[in-house]
Image (tube, rainbow over all chains, first blue to last red; front, side, top):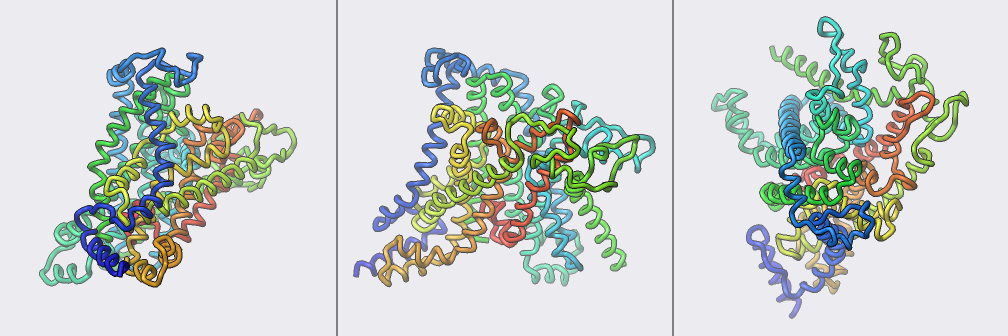
Length: 321
Length: 288
């Protein structure tokens, strides 16, 4: 008898599942807590504790070179000195703005290229399967390797300049990695190369799911190719485009590997992103408490952005597309 | 007109494909080029290796062809050590994330444990730049004597990929009808028994996919291994960035050789998970 009531509760709960979040059900509170317990412990140990520690250190001027353990950092208390220094430091602000610009540029170019390619792949052709698989290769390349190979490709006497020289008149000798304006472009280029395939793949999946009959209906009504794209396809694919942009933007914002391996943020700080900036301050200048403050600022910023960005992701998972 | 358009389309696709695959081609050929062909000599770029050789591979594994080429890295290890370290830390880290994450995912999917907030905050973790989170971990690791150890890397790999496992596995569990576990419970299984005996077998494929994904993530890591290890424990990507030689300066060929070894497992594994590639890379948001 008990089991029967049990099942009814579950059925009722599953009805609500799609919409309003429901409180954990009584009969299973125990097991559900037990199941998420290891995860909670892992998060507490490896995320919450370090973050609390980071906040603590960010309020001091402690560095390992102070000679004392980190928990004695209160002896060098400074309140929000590091935050003030960070938020008024032109080089941090510049790095932050540069990271945002690079993120937007990389995501934008990846979207345009990926969408264009996905449209080209929409109609069947011989070897489409093979070509799709080949397009996936760049995203499977370990970032340390892609950083290395772009170092070779973008040398002043490297294959890229040589190839461009063959097309344009004269010798083309762009100093990709040492020119202050070209260096950030070079770093963005690696991201574009590596992740356009992901954009392509997501968008292709989205485009393929557009119901055939709706397109046929538009055909009967005499819609042009562009009209079909604009009024039939795009509205259906929009949520997927949104997800692709969010996920790529999120990942591109974290960019470190390519920037570090290609230019180490240089020349000077010309291609330094937030991640590179933090790494350099920590490991080359040993400004630990300063870095802690900057890291907290970045995390607050990301959390605010994430709370907005996450909604479409969640909606999509619930919908179960 | 139609035929013209089709062939134009094919040409564009082929051209873009060539551009996108060229860096891979360059890595692979570089691995087989002798030192003289690494960079252009006398204005000649070696588009294909003129004298292909295995010297680069021999060199990173410790052999010194010709004897004169002293092979120097900043760490007292060789490529074999670094590959073993990468394998061990990636695989064990993956198992850890999988063990902890799968339970949490089932708890969230089936019982809505933690309400909406838990899933949200778990995913949010993946949005933080790793460097911002990793620095306090460095302090903690130094304090616990986990810095520069394999165990230290395993723990952090498990933690960093845990959110990924939760979201991906949640998307697989969401697809299993509740009736399945309910039926098992009616048949006398405990809640946990229902999970283990009737739900888990249904998501076997999802579990394998998630495992391979997480392995690739860990295997690809550069930053974490750079910050939290690097003296005695060196992973292959970090080793790759450190290879230099006293004799020839930049060891392009040797680095490319290690690069080829590094990129092979993810490429082969990606064929296995091709069906779920989009789902994995969108945290389970898009399910095809």
